Length: 207
Image (cartoon, rainbow, N blue to C red; front, side, top):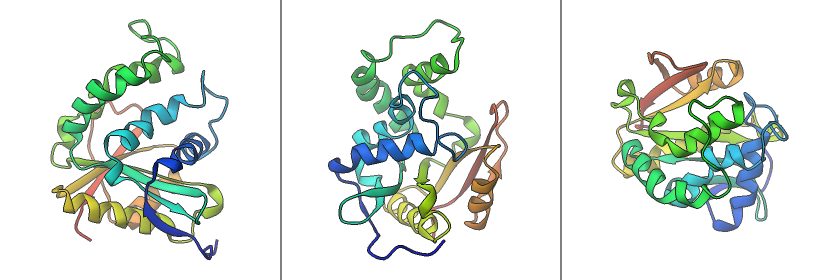
């Protein structure tokens, strides 16, 4: 896939929020489209995109032409601090849309909603040496053109400026293509037990 003239990487703007949510759900099924799979198409973005746009907008970047975002990278330089902010400042914003599920949650929807109420799932002792973490997604038509590498590089530089020396991410084991992408960017596997179909990867933020 060739590059798209006119598309640039720039900081996230509040007007990009709807596009980021759309990209998130359209790439959330191991890289495929997850629209219609859950009780709301906003559920996955409310967990994996919205909190970062609200709490860490300075570490969110989009691939866009002047009018439309078609990819993004977002994250935090301090996962532990982000988890605290998530619980105190994000969960109350979405709680009215997602009633607390039973314990234990019994459906895929309830598992995701439970994660909104317990962001501590992001904290694993094996990841303590990789305090930053990121999420990156590109619409299919914009993959394979070098944009993903540039988005990750943009985030690594920003996280390094924010004081993080290393970063981690989780990739679905079913997403073989994404794993190859991260391997080429110098990420290595981090052994995390009981990761439920997710492989954790890490690297330094030095570029």
